[in-house]
Length: 199
Length: 199
Image (tube, rainbow over all chains, first blue to last red; front, side, top):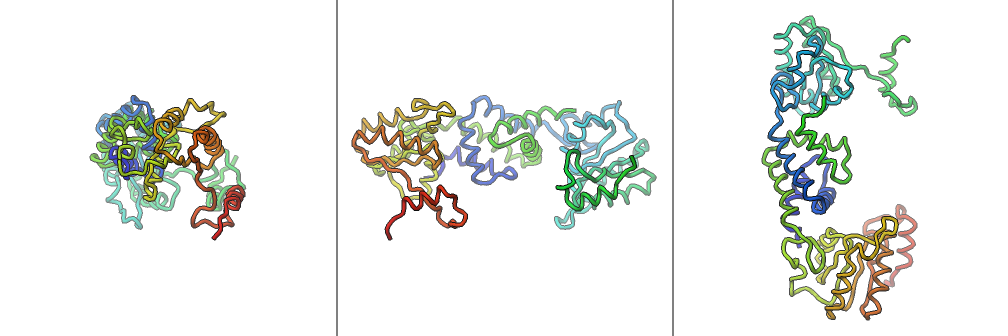
């Protein structure tokens, strides 16, 4: 006996999500059947709505309902600073901080020779064009992840942008707030010592 | 800045699933936006279909598209044996084995004094009625989980059913096939020794 077709299809759909294998998909599918009817209807509708109503901002590449996105369109934001991130969710994380009021640029990936991803595969061309068009941008803050690929992408962008006379900075590496030195890995400690500041 | 509304709603929906917290929900939601349009449409439709087209069998309580379910309706199945399980997915697991050809009964839970679940909260009444109506059932195999609640439910059912002259058995406890004694916990080893069989 196979699973009834409606549940087999639902299991297949759940399995298409990242990090969800066969066992989890089965668990989620059976859970769905016991869920409130309204919740399932909302879930179904929100999947379609997210796919239908969200697009990438033609200026910064962030996920948005409107084009340009609310950040690019906001005249009150500081147009002299621009943070470069890998993914739209990084924009959300930085915005949660509520301390940065400049612009963003989303690369949608990083340079990765292993995965065969070169500069033309991520959103770099539009960044360069943006910097050429807007002479208001004085500083580009590179906020790619602290991974080898993120670092390599940061170096690449720095060499690309600096010649245009724009200041290029990188997020600080070091101990996470609240973390113990005892449990920090050697690379993090090295970066923390390297980037030490006078107090 | 908040997440755009369509994505916020999708995050909320993902968070309603078991074992999916805020961070995972955000990751899944952003992943969904990058998914193939057809896959998202299928996902959305299969959620609705699973909720709409699946019901519980009025005889055994299993999940089914038809009522009675294909197992209850199958005249070729052995009507002298009945396996009692906690959840519909347990039926699927047992059916995958392809070695059992009897009937099932799904409790939809276990007795759990901690959660305030008594005999009237799970599918026991319909089991008793079923046994009273069908004198074809000669053996009830209790296949609740090997947890304290599952064991307690098995004991409860045994005391309830045995007086009617029906044989009541319980799945064997012991070492999982392919497992090492070195890594088995003490309770499993104890059960394995207790249930040892002559070879």
